[in-house]
Length: 143
Image (cartoon, rainbow, N blue to C red):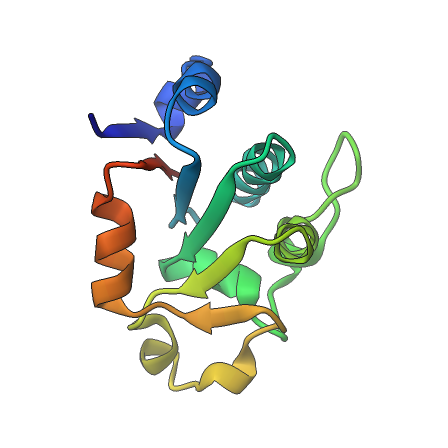
């Protein structure tokens, strides 16, 4: 059974039981341009890693900016209550084993190449990402 949870469902605290009792794989899809939403997506993803789940993060649209070497201040500025930034927690997720990719059309849309990305971030292959999103053993969170 597929379990897909939106940010609204996550705020209702249904995500923890779904992942805790279900599949070991998580794909977090982030498209929001809101720094607080981006940060919370990384907070929850790193918590999933800490709980032993394999995490793959897909950044599309404005959220892809979190992965840029020259990221906007909204991605790098610390936020309350712990002065963490979306990019800082993204880097922490990478260090803890998360696979992080930007959408295949993100860099061409910016006129950039993979050298624009921070270490540890790749470019998603549409067939591979579609397979990961459709896999029966995967939960998908969308922000």
